[in-house]
Image 1 (tube, one colour):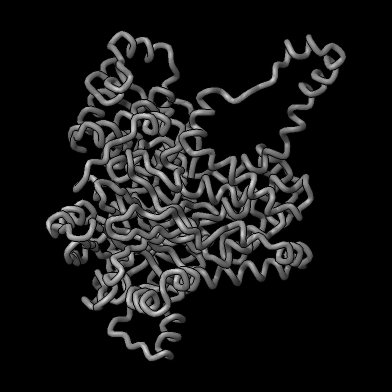
Image 2 (cartoon, helix red, strand yellow):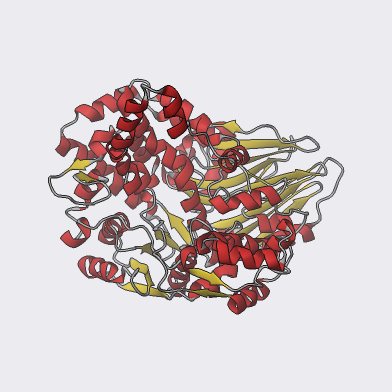
Length: 632
């Protein structure tokens, strides 16, 4: 709902309020309703407000008393429950906002106890004026961003890297920027691709005392601790009707809690089952709810399905049209807000258009269907894994036959090892995926070995894939001052899903259903929950993601890279560029263009307008190119 920023310098130093104002101006899009600064001696913080709860000035931040100072971004969904508890202890409130409750709870009970008590999405800094310590906190799944940098003995933090760059030198790291070509930058949970700029990891807090380096992150939420054998076995034995009823109750309660708002609300719908179910449940509770969708004009359009949902729930549908050439028009602006090269989620561009359409209707917060695919195995590639051993059977049979001649087998079927590129990409990410997988398999040690890897997929997707989607939703929503909320990611639903046996997530059918995973029905429990709320055509719809004309459709002429970031980084001569365009797949070249767009903006300091003009002069979209890989 907001943008936050702050600075903590060593004792006896002075924070210039003008620097805080400069940081805040870079984040006006995150909170256009109010801007304020708190500054004293060596500490200062700033807050851009998007007012959603308590629209009066009483809800403005920073929040401060004679000892503590808070700036906060997000929503605490159980704030009314916590408020009642605090009032019972004698606390009195002058604001009806969740910010007031969060501040009072922090002041009375401290940071660790508060992090265990609150439910929601958040990023905040809490400063103790007496101890001269600031604590930076981020929600369990990393829904809200929080970046920080420690340099020259001072700690800087903000919602976006742009705010840090306004007051200190934060340049792209060349190695991480290049490796962003494989999408690592979009899915990072603890680092950015800027030198010496880090993310507060999800589910952690970082404390820093004035004049001292920040302490290592302290974990307050470990997703593996939610894995519980007793819950797993109880869900495994539960009759299907009872299981479906439990899931439906959890989801309905989550939707109701996330509709809390004093400002108009909406829902982003794609025409798919996840967002459709959320939209239908929300429409049943909010008579003023509006629906918003992106119409990617052409063969990728799902507008008809969104219209079907709109007619079924009897709520108005607002369309954001997106034509192929709009990717070129919006590429630079999207990257400026995205703060990483646009590789995995080029559909961030139409997403931004949907957010702008919602803002034009006066909406400030929306519900989305994000998270269902990660929790309940909704991606086709996850179920297709089951068929890999059958597809590989002929090769395995040949290997077995050649086993009688070991030398010939080794020659024909050499052992595969990770490529140097793949190894370096893992190293850039700190081997996070491998470490978490080892921990995850241990956490699910009570699951039969043959099912362990598949059971871990939900946590893997939450830790790896989801973080990129949350990044996209935050940055593209905030571009238009729109807050996204995620009912599927409620704490109780996450706990339910990671303990739900795989066989209860996947359905079976005698129909072919989906050629990518025949006879298996993805996220069957979600489809059953949606049956009373959606028309049959949407219930049967296959997973399609958020398709569009993306990088596979990009074409460029020789000369594009000259004088740009990539040409300087790789010493790319005109002759080498011309050869690359002739010899390399257009998709790989397009990913390099994405890196170049990012580098021109953040490495060379070119304006969005300058980069846009350069793109329009050299790059086109081929509408007859192979279909872009469908991503959410």
